[in-house]
Length: 223
Image (cartoon, rainbow, N blue to C red; front, side, top):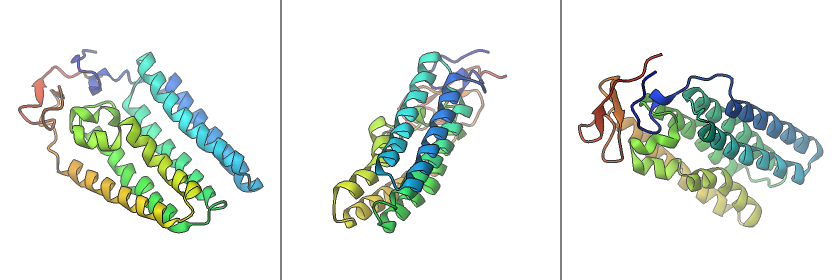
């Protein structure tokens, strides 16, 4: 396999199915879902917090391991996106047992499970390994959605506001604002030009991938 030398380009995909990061993704998903089930059955706030922590810590760990071990794959990126939805949606729904405020949770689920799911899979239309490298295509969309702070805010803000702010209209307002921002990002990504050739790879945040300023010819790797 020949590589173009651009970090995050899909030609660097080792095409691994069985890997340490994927195993961590599946393990943290199973652990978080198990803790959510126990939290719902026992009406236990500490167990729900543990479920959130298992999801958040595991989500950071699988990505860090993938980069550390050189095992970042497009398949792993899709698995991570799907498992994130399973973990976060189950935690959010169980949160209603302790903070009965369905409106902000409903808006969050529409945003995260529907809009953000599509938005997180669309980067794979370009020759990048995962959304984490979408800065090669559009730095603004990447910073607003896949910068570590943006990702932490998207999954944690609702919990913080519902638990820490008595007036749940604040959480609803924040959830609506995030939904609007995610929808705007989705529209922007859908309007971006795609590469016109399988031999074009991104080289930097100077324009959309596929434009003359932001791409260069390369011998794309083929399996």
